[in-house]
Image (cartoon, rainbow, N blue to C red):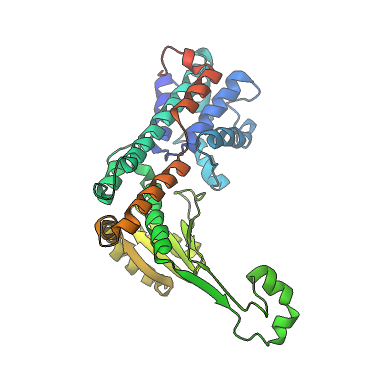
Length: 350
């Protein structure tokens, strides 16, 4: 295999990577291990398939603040023939060893650029106020950028969370649990259970708390799974990507909650409802919220009658969640490049 073919394969993985960059980081750490320790054989996948996940996680924790929780099968897609199989890694390894880590530096430069693009999204929020911020323009700033378009689901999730959590807080919504029959023999026998699991007893048969929504956060956008959940009994699936019958079936089958709220693009609503009816799951769907409805709610929150109460809270929460999701700074990358010696390379292309 020649250098150009190997680089083209790497570029495919980088281009497809979502903003957390797990797969490119794993490639970089495999190549780093090969260059520095020399205790793996790039032509033999089994010498690095599993341990390379730990090498990747150490770096992703440093820059992203989280690790991949995708299935092992999904993670191993990295080594498929259409990505970076051993033959490609072997060629990249040769280039990397001969040039003091240039392939590693190339990958981490791409990661730094990707995260700096996310920082520009944060800047939009921080530089806006309730009069100037528009949800449509904010989301469009990600969909227009090829490097960020595959991560728009994560941004959409943050947008939904900021709105839902702020409105629940401002509305001061309370939810509660109650034991209907406090004279029940079962209650007497299992009083320790009700106290430890429910926080209830014969003396305290009712309990109320603030209604909240939570981001699962660790769910990979490519996996089936839950995006948000609420302590008042609903599961929330957020899909800004184009839906297919398979995607919709996944939404239906992967979540066991009795009540599901789905947030999607306006153009996807009809196919969503139609396919869910075919699967017999429509009765579990509490509501389908479209991007247009979110846009209208944001407009009211930022510039409506209650905007003084809500507007700044939503923007602050939006900014905070972006910071949590993408915590890296330029100085952290500078330190890392010095540690690895990438800063001494005259160029990071090959």
